Length: 313
Image 1 (cartoon, rainbow, N blue to C red):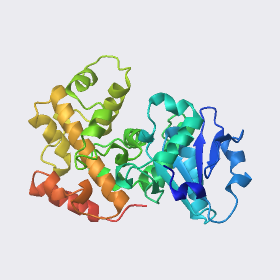
Image 2: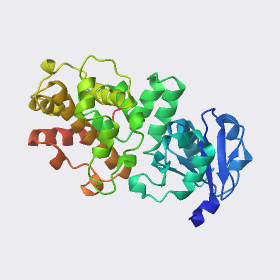
Image 3: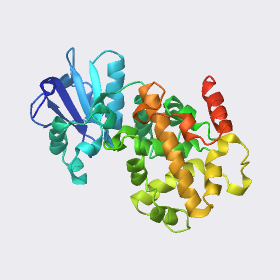
Image 4: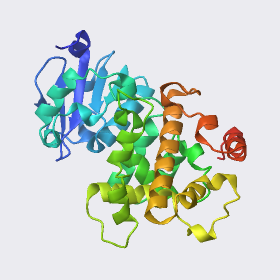
């Protein structure tokens, strides 16, 4: 069933050839035959009160960024995104007509990946992803600037061994943690961990010198490389911020230690990211609660001190 809102919404999608497809209201999917720069001048987007919806797919990152900037300038009323889980099969993404049709039937809550307005906290992820796609994933100054704007970045900086470049790759791989919320158990990170390949079998391959080719192996390796940039024997385990390396050691090191520490890293990232998106603190809806996450008073105190500092320009 279509909502009343569908009659007033322009749904947009970037096809694999770069051309923008759109559907106005309940109208059919239409190929604009235009690339983004030309489409931005299209009369399709003219008029007060324009409402735009786009799926948060990587190929739409530049489109979402451009629409957000128009919204920021009050040129359109609202820009909303939803997760790609509205698509029934991976092949759906190859047919823009199917994509635009599926967008009519999103009935998921915003907290679980349904439609929500693109905010100042969402924009850095899409802008960073668009930039890195355009530069073939070169982590340049522009990508670094977007990373510094990211709602999870300050919390990530608490980890002294963090790789900014790999963290950017991880953030743009996840795109939005709300897409991986298990509606039956919203506080759990298992769905995101599975997507990232954080299982004993995958981690065993990633922690070995084997060649990695599969998607989950590569994503698991990205998680590991984001935090594990120093050999464990060279890390000061008395430093509160090195909590991931203490988890690594407590689990016995090697692949098992890598897995346990990477799982903790992803939970830490997820909770802080969700807290940043919601712009509020607490334990509801899986938001970050340091007193429940950290094991020692020293870790909690060090985290609180870090988060209380003003951001550096």
